[in-house]
Length: 324
View (tube, rainbow, N blue to C red):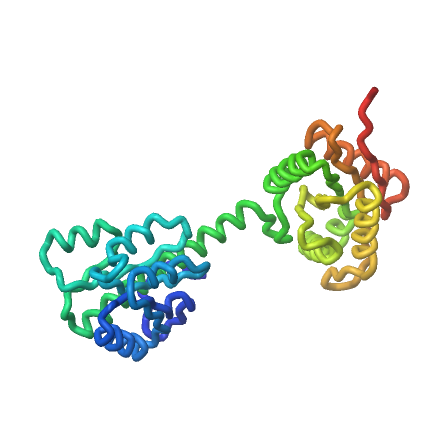
């Protein structure tokens, strides 16, 4: 993704939202002229005959990002639409071009203060309108680039770069959220701590690039063996955590066995040869008697230790029992 806020050349692909424009104009002849111009320039045009109809368009789930609003309209004028659009919490910025026969400086100031991005006085030149809409497209395209960059940074801050799973910090936050949700709803939460058996041998024998490939593949197999609303994270090194909302002891055990079997089902490629690998899983279940997230992870870690000591490639479930 390019980070340079360059202007949009005519041949640059534009998001669908920047191909749509709303006209709010009560004069039918001027409305038809505007629509014809805009369609010639490649816009998909939405037409509103008054301010109330325009506002209904803006209340849709995916409102248009570009608008041409007449100032004077029955029911709701262009200034009121500007104010409402700017006060809206939809999160989508809209480029608003206000058109009117009023040309006094105080009127221009009122229009811009109401939230308009630009202002054209009727009658105006067709080429000037086209130029101002190109400016609007550039502004909105830059906004899209900034939002994409922001989302990329958010993803990088919460996800593991190698596997694409939640990273440790985000996973601990999610664990706290899910534990609190389970307590409030009096529903169970299964917690799995997974560790790759003899993973150090993979790095020592085949190199760290092969080890990275194994980690990424195991992440894919864990994801394929879990539900879409389970939470999977890389806890550190060769350890992973899976959170299973709504799963009691039996369901947690079955889910863990499914993941264990999915990992062991096929060989892993190191780039030179294919090798078998297994995982050990320690499991526990959050319940109303549980105390802290650390205690729950500690129980899962203890169960994982027991799985390793018992020969690896197995699941051990330890549930919390309060001391009387």
